[in-house]
Amino acid sequence: MSQENVATVYRLYAASRRRDKEACVREADPYVEIVSYLIGVEGTVYRGHAGVRRYIDDLFSAFPDWHPQILRTTEHGDKVLAEIRMAGRGASSGLPIEQTVWQVTTFRGGKMVGFHGYRSRAEAVEAMGLPE
Image 1 (cartoon, rainbow, N blue to C red):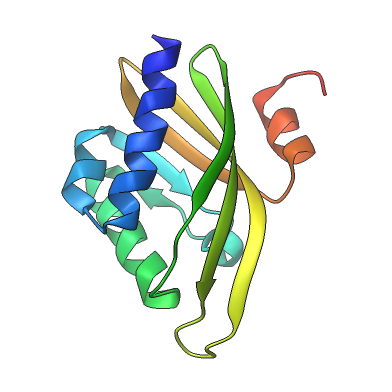
Image 2: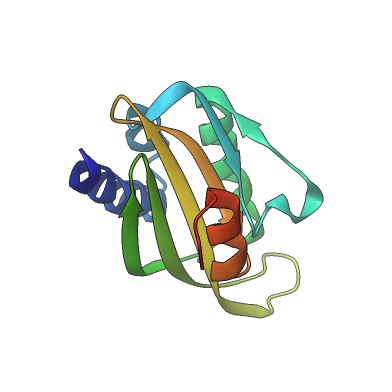
């Protein structure tokens, strides 16, 4: 199942780049929880399928030309750790953003149940309960 989860992470990012909210919803459990590093600075937690849709809307409202690139992934049981290079421009400021973040996507029954962003690999690994 783990390689299937890695493939799902790639599909989720491809769908989000296309702004295909419904493709993302199809990959998500109805009780999914999303905490984005980029958008989550405000403490926002997106829940359920409506939350998936709102997350994508909020992301592209803040960064209309957002385009992430998966640099690498590793699977750890029901979790996939992904290093992501993000780039885009702020909608209000026009200022560019380019940074590397870490995402932990958790799966149950082949569906995404959690998507949490971290500023560093060490934070993501710690949250997963893995040794560095």
